Image 1 (cartoon, helix red, strand yellow):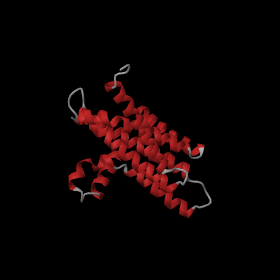
Image 2: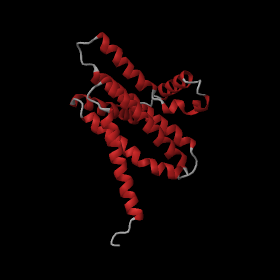
Image 3: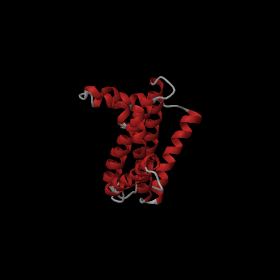
Image 4: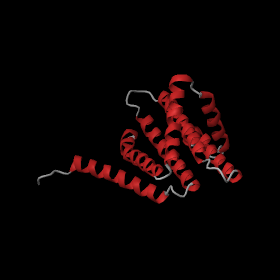
Length: 195
């Protein structure tokens, strides 16, 4: 069942990714470049130099302690909330209040992308180790759900901190892309042409 749900969630994952990349492209070029470099920099660090597992574990524990009142969700809270990414956006907000004359957004976007990538890489590794079998149906559903939640958090932060990032355009584009995939899949599977 979870494998079927994961397959059904895949168009939303694709739609949210396409929509986010297009919406970040509406921002100034150096901001979207900072996001891309944040992702690439973390991957280089993780693959070639050092895996900051202790940093991820610390963030996971902080999240679990912060929202401990949601006891049924406690086991997955550390995976669902990218705490360091949220901290980077909060730090940008505070820094922009102090240093109003400087455009600090690219630096904090880089940091947010770096920490988001760290969060997703370690979340994927942790979930993959917990899932037996070669199909890993629970893993796919879990990682897709966490990815969608994390992207929604990041999109909301971008919309709050930069007027050029439109949540309405973001959600419209998700609906367009996911809807097109669902429609094409349905037509491919169930509509017989030529009748």
